[in-house]
Length: 144
Image (cartoon, rainbow, N blue to C red):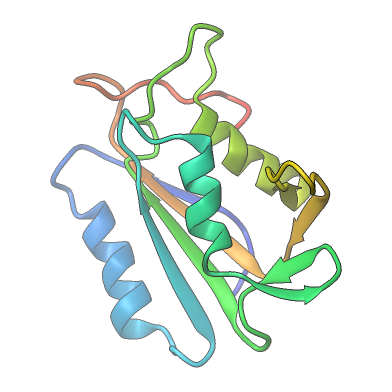
């Protein structure tokens, strides 16, 4: 957590990936310093839902810049990262919005009257997934 690098846990179902991260976020992290956010992906998860959940926990810092409350770092944990359905062009939109955030440090507003770029600061992402199969898909190499 001290190095702001993304991290992905991969392992068979039932090996404790999610429990380990949730325990660390909820019981071992300083709640005054870190703001945990949890997302559980499913086959029906959309990019809009993913963006809305993260946006709901952010505060405006200045024009076009958002983040957790000043003095805190956001910790986003995405469980079952490879569950979203693959669309006909091979993309998984919830993963693509996370990739956009990681590559460009933000995303665009979706409101009709405001499509400005929204820079997101002081957030780290952690993911967990099981190997492909049984409803789980391969994730795009651009995300991994």
